[in-house]
Image (cartoon, rainbow, N blue to C red; front, top):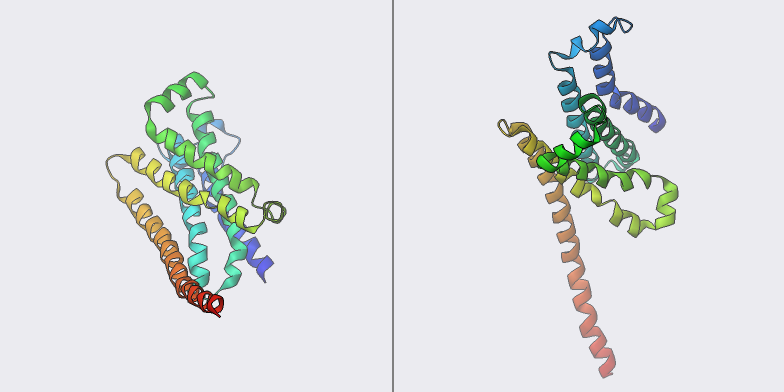
Length: 222
């Protein structure tokens, strides 16, 4: 059952890419004069925005799996987290490739000038770079190599990557900030959930630790 659901989810995650490919090549993929017409007047901008949106949305979906599995009592949801996280990295790479290839045509000088001038590009690159170690160490083998605690500590980089992604979106749009603000609110709620769970866990541990000290003192007095 899980394997079937993973396959369905895999196909669903490819949906945005299929939409872009169909819109770009249309029904006549061998007619170069028609390429991009299905994506509107500015197909490169459409591809850039779509891949960027889905990168951030997949990050948010990845972060929502832990709260969902706890609140809905569905522990099996964890089996889908790695795939969704890797798709976030995949669409992030497509987002960058669109900028490097279709927008700048691999003009390194122009890209460096862009990075120096536009801070939203710098923060966006930071978000993607933070995702690289997460994608590399996403396998079970890496969990064994690093150990559970170190692996979990490393994968907390996803929080900073998502934060950088929201800031990147916010700085990019400038005028109509409704969508990045909505994404920021969702991210804030997901991070707040984790803070609350951590605080409750710390609170529950406090009485246990506090009770050890008097007991030890009594034992020493005896």
